[in-house]
Image (cartoon, rainbow, N blue to C red):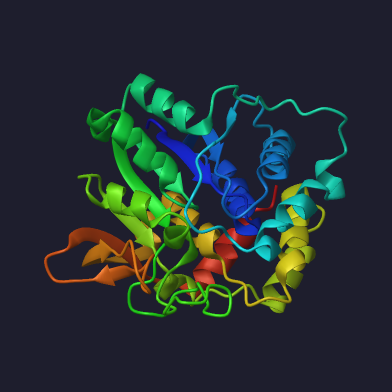
Length: 307
């Protein structure tokens, strides 16, 4: 059986690195490259941390590209600074040099080139904003046929968003950050005919990162990837933290573990609800991850990271 071709686009949050690590453990996935978007991070340490993770996992052949796109609404600095911490974790700095290649062209152009050269449709695994995807569609609308589907951690359908009013005055609390960073681009992707499988806050709210789970990872420290995962989660354990991007990425490893539900939706691009993924009759049809066996999910992570 041929492997599933996947191009990853993440935005440098702690859970983005963990999602990358999880994707690298999937034997039926061929990772064609990683684009790092300057959203939930500071871009230089985020790119460096990504390359070091691929080095640690033997992904020396997987190119990493730095996107030059910019969103409308910046992530809080408090969130973004985690990229510096991860980049400085000792386990990622045992070597003097980084072997995983850094692409010289901007990440958005790299994404376009990978899709154009692909011999079969590619799945886009997006755990940040959809800005690079919108760029690709604007540059070459015909590229749609090269995209098998978009699996995206983003949006909040029937629960409150996570763009809190105390962070963003004037907002009504309905937006999710990966949409809010660049709602215009999300709306552009919504105009396409590409299959979209969302992992919204509705389901990620059910998989918190608990002290018990982090301690279980810690008991697997003899495995380098478990050691790194435990360190990453320990960094954020004082927050209300959820397995956002990790849950979305798990879908690629075992889609049968999820129940999907179709919704008609639209992206709100202005006003107090800017960044809201609104359920509306007659809107763009997407599929959202609706249910997952939580016990299975945590066990799956522990087993995958035993390497």
